[in-house]
Length: 104
Image 1: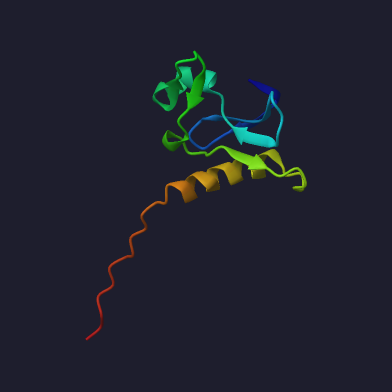
Image 2: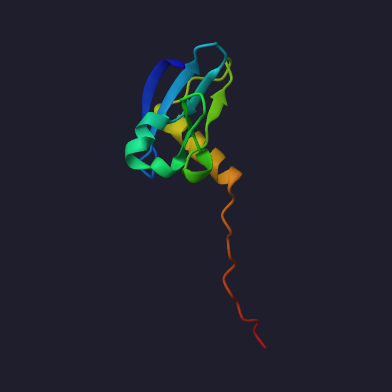
């Protein structure tokens, strides 16, 4: 269901990251392939009734993002960083402030 597939690299958790288009057209997307995840992260793969696989991005350290056609060309590393940042925004990490005792 994808075309123009190009491997960009690997996320911090070892997830293969690709740029691709869907066969029906549209923008370039950045994400991963369910078939790759079957071997390394099967819990992040959903089998649909139609027999296709889908990725559960909520279980990964990247999010699928689309790149606007008029966006400047980014390095592969910068593109992977954007997908990782989108995942952090989707699932914000709780940041705890260090305990500081007030001086008396």
